[in-house]
Image (cartoon, rainbow over all chains, first blue to last red; front, side):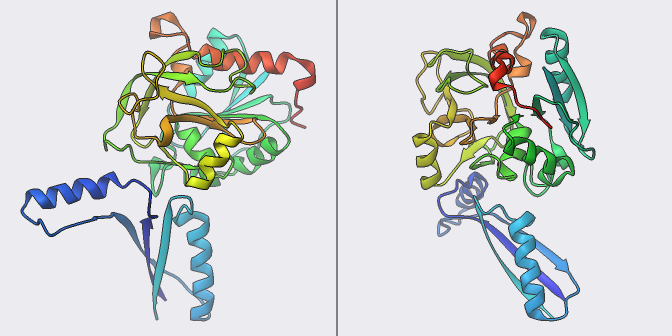
Length: 80
Length: 238
């Protein structure tokens, strides 16, 4: 199975990189852009007996290592 | 007393701490490789600055899973003193030994300069030799030192007086311009509820001799040494 994991800052956490990108887009004339938030994206290949089993393992991986629950939220998609 | 300085792959201020303890303060100190166990009989464990595991994923995210960290968590639970400086602070936050997290500086720039810190609390082994409100001049050198905690955590930190150092200006005021990284509430260092684990972004080990521009960092180390010299405070590492 292949999983795509998306990690983003929680609301309320400063995201100066997102702000810098937003300013650059404005400078380039994309005035319609608002509220840019930068995050992380991971692709993982894993073996699992079922989709549910994979979900449980991925949640564990995110909680333990891939995301920091103090500052980040995560979600993932599984492709079979 | 006996000190241990943990060496992670990517630590770079381990020798600064070691030299300050050994040469300036004449302490018994040893390096501890992150894959080894914590030896018995230590009084204080230092997690030094640097870039453990290249800061990959998040600063300190992988250092917290180094084999020695299980022992450090146990050591702290028994009341042993743990000091985390810069990357060490990040690792302590990631491991849950300290509340909050350290994220990218608000300026997006690496800051490397001396700053003023105000000592907020003195009833800890790390600040006992200082006076409340005393200013310390210490260097910072980091790209991800912006302290963050959610509102409930910040409330708890204040209630328990766990904020030990704040960034201030030369007159001791915690202004926005005195804040080098955008830290919440100008927080530069916090301790745990048990007051035996302390993490800070500034580097006391780099301000321990006149030739370095400041000796104010000695306040932190001499606090620890005098706290542990009192026999009733002595903690056996088992």
